[in-house]
Amino acid sequence: MIDEALGVEVVAEPPWVRVRHGAKSALYPERDPERFLAALREGFAAVRFADDADVVAVRFADDIDVRGEPAFDADERRALRVDVALHWLRYFASVREPARITAGELAHPQSWDIVLAAARAKCGGDPAAFALAARLLGVLPEDVARWRRVEDDRLANM
Image 1 (cartoon, rainbow, N blue to C red):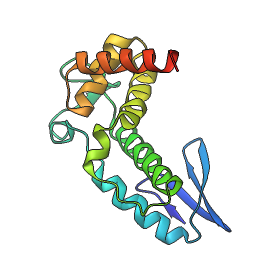
Image 2: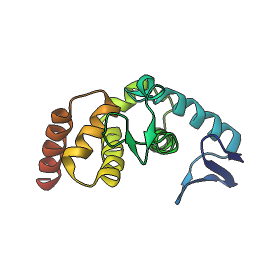
Image 3: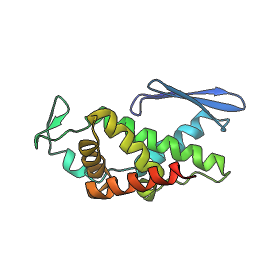
Image 4: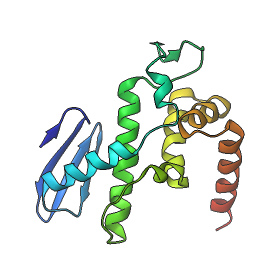
């Protein structure tokens, strides 16, 4: 099954489904591609970036918004929302709980990591990446920078 709006393909590989999204391909513990796709669509709908309402009014030119700041275009935003939803579907499967992705998942550090990685790939350096990620997450750039510093310290000292 292909969902062109989400840019994903879901194929049965019993007892799993394979999900292809861009260059990524992963197996999920679900037997029914239609049921998986329904859960993904539901999760995608729940993952909304803080500046989604502003994006309608902002024009993009070469990945820069009219304010002169780096920005994700509509396709990149869609792909990033799918990445976050797929992450949470995998999480719920790993803990053997029914998938129930909510808007609150975007506030979780695992989602912040996905968003910041995409912002770093887009912007390069951290100050610009922190600002772009913060705009999507609805927080201040210094909140993202502090979280990343604490998370890096935690990982280095495990």
